Length: 347
Image 1 (cartoon, rainbow, N blue to C red):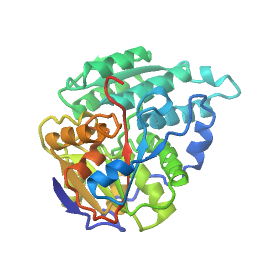
Image 2: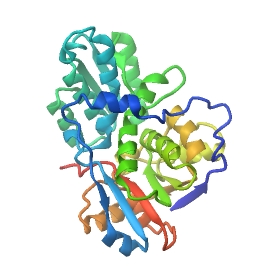
Image 3: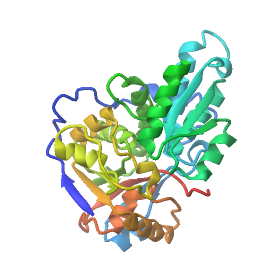
C-alpha cells in the first residue's frame, strides 16, 4: 500500500478555484420530494474494529440506497431532479423532461442513477460502458430502461464517446466528472452526495478521528469531505483510497496539477478512473490529508475479511475498509468512519 501526505492541505492546488459545494440544503429539499428516498444506516462495527485494532469503526452502508444499491443514486437523480424542477412550469414533474435525452459514460452505478432519474421525470437515458464493465451492470441498466452502448477499452474512452454522441445528437451530457468547459453538471452530481454526508453528521455520536473515502474520479470523496470539513472543521484526518492501477488523485497531488495516471485494468472497476474530476481534485487537494493506494489483491482480501463481519460489497465498494485490512496504521485510539459505497454485484 502506497501512501502520500498531501502538501496542499488547507490551501488547495494553485489555479484550481472552483470547489465542491458544501451546503446540502438545496439537495436535501429536492430529494425530499423523491418517494424512494430514505436514510441509509450508519453501522457501528465493534467486532471488526477490534479485529483491526481500532477504538471504533463506523460504516455508512449505501448498499440499499433508493433501491439502486449504491451511493450514486443520490448524484444523477439529484441533478436530473434540478432540471425537472426548472422545466416543469406547473406541469406534472413526471413529464417535465419528456423530450430530454441524457447520455453519460459510467462504470456502472452512475449509469444506474442517470437511468433512474431519467425514468422518474419522463426522459430517456443512453449509457456508454467500457468493454471492461461487467455484463451484470449492463443488464441492470437495461432493466431500468436505459439504452446501453459499449465503447472503448476503459472509462476515459467511453466518456469521450458519450460526449461525442451528446454533441452530435443534441443530447444532455451528464457526467459524474468535471473538466474545463463542463464543470456544472458534474458539480451538481457531486452536490447530491452531500445528502449522505449530512446523514452521517446527524447519525454519528461524535466526530471521528479519521475518515476513509474511496475515489474513482473523486466525486464521492470530494463532496463528502467538503461537507465534513464544514461540519467538523480540521479535526478528522481525511484519507483518500484508490487502486494502485488508477492513482488519479494521488498522482495529481504529487504533481501539483491534474494528470492522467497510468496503470492496468483494476478489479476495483468503479474506481478504475485514470483522470480525476477537476472540481473533485480541487476539493480533495484542499480537504484531504493523505492518499493511499491498494493492490487488487489487497482489495480482494479486504472485502473477504469484512464479509466475515456481515458487510457484503465489491472491491470498489469496500476500498476504504480494505485499506484498513491491508495494514493502514491509525493507532489503537482511532475512531474511524468509512463508506461501503455499493452492495455486491449480484445483490
